Structure formats: structure tokens, C-alpha cells
Image 1 (spheres, each protein chain N blue to C red):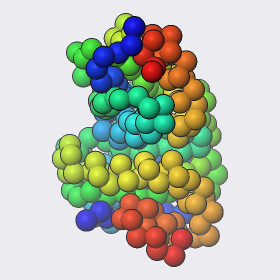
Image 2: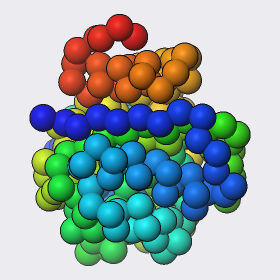
Image 3: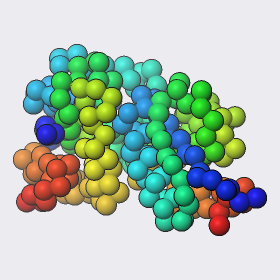
Length: 149
Length: 100
């Protein structure tokens, strides 16, 4: 069972605030522990802005031992985009995030998410009118339930 | 010469769990559409250094550190640009004679 959360219209002054806000969605729905958002920031600090995996889209995550309690997936839409310092994909307006309790539990949900992204999920998320719709679109995408998207 | 075995492809990222898994899915789709028999794995850049795949795929900030790891190293910025990856794979695998 994948836990899903969303936040919309988030104000972030820079990429660190954006990453923390995105990961905090997972804390809020109980899928990640309180240390997870800062761990996600450290991933970018140590490995670079590679989590910006497509134009305007970041995949925020850290290792399971940083506070993954369940398989959780979240989406955060910023009020105004921020730069991550990525050579091609800045600025970022949409952040997906996930957490997992171990190295394998997330693979099925994330593979489904990848297929949905290849099929235009990011555009469907950007077209969602509000936070509830964001959550519904994401939930439909990762569970296979088409929902009200 | 044509490859007489399954192509061994490695998708890399910093943590090796999320972003590289996304890239793996795109790469599998791209290789499928080229009709290439391939096994795609994903891992972090540190673990990648101990491997010897035929093809490495990742963002420039990672592939620049892995240029000697594989005969073919492909840099991708947009992990959702499947067509772009298909074109890169078509060109680079053809150079090696690995496309049927």
C-alpha cells in the first residue's frame, strides 16, 4: 500500500526550501520520519542537482535509513519556480518525492510512476486545479486507479 | 561485430534508488523500441565503479566521472525524453555494430 500526499502553491525561496517542503509532505502523511527532509537536502548537496530528472521536474528522495517508514509518494507544486543549478532542466516548478522503508519496497510503485511520467503524468499534475486534485491524479497514477483525473 | 549476447546496460545516479530507476524504465522502453535484447540495472555512482557494463547512461555530472567504465557512455539530461535516448542509442550502438 503506497501512501500518497500533495501540497500546492508552496512558496520556496530557494531549492533547499523547495526540497524540504516536498519531503515534508511525506512526513505529514506519516510515511517518513522528521529527519527525512534534511536528508533529502543533503543528497543534493553531496551528489549535485541530478534529482532534476526532466524539464522543471525534480525527484526528491534520500536513503531508506534516513527515515523511510512506509512506501510514500508525494507531489508539490511551487507558487514560483526555483533554480537547482541544473545545466538543462531549471527552473523547477514540480517536485515529486518518495520514501521507502528498505531498498526494494518502492520499486513497484516507482516503476509505475516512471511509466506514468513517460505517458505525460507531469502535464496532468500541472493541469490539476488544486491540492486535492494533485493528490488524486498522483494516487491514480501510482495505484493504477484512474480516479477523477 | 554484432553482440552475441544480451546487452548489459547500467543507469546511474547519486543514490541509486530513485532517479536511476526512472532512467532505467526509460532506457528499457528505448531499447525495446530499437529491438535490442538488453538487461538494464540501476545503481549509484560509487557502486557503478566496480561494474563493467556495455553501456552506461546517466546525467553529465555522473557520466563525466565514468567515461572509462564502459565502451559506450551516454549522457541524458531529460529522463523523460525517450525519443532523444532512442536516437542516442541508435547512433552509439550502430557505431559498435551492436544493432541488428
